[in-house]
Image (cartoon, rainbow, N blue to C red; front, side, top):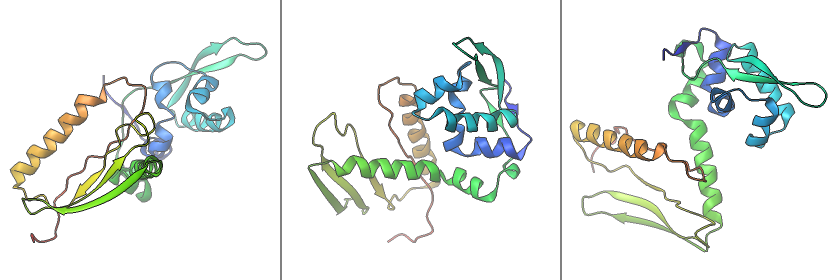
Length: 204
């Protein structure tokens, strides 16, 4: 399917902000009422109705029918497409920066990581030199229960010494890991950040 080309700043700004664009996602799956989506998202109808109005005015949502109910019928909204493209020139500099660096996802990830680790019975930070010369930071956590903190993992390093070809290979492997799990339908949502970039710091 050919992507829907966006040409207005209003629509681009809504799609370029993940915290707003995610509210369009349920409508991309098919016709929904504002009340249905608000209940699923844990939002008030009033708050979502405001955003739906923005999406509708920007041409991202259309009314496709009504659902009868006692009193006034509820409008059924559907996204005009499930695939959008637009020029980065339509985004405000702050929006482009946040989107390019994944800052909105990073904030959510770190907030949830902090929340998850605060309920641990024990939290230990480990800093160690690996045999290949990499200095590593990581947390060693013992969860209070498997149900309370399932699968929390976080590690970081700035000491991967690779050739450009090896870096490209690693990037492909990370993408393959993401593809392996992204289609799963488990009962709990997880956040994952995969990042790899060359550093200007000299080899130590």
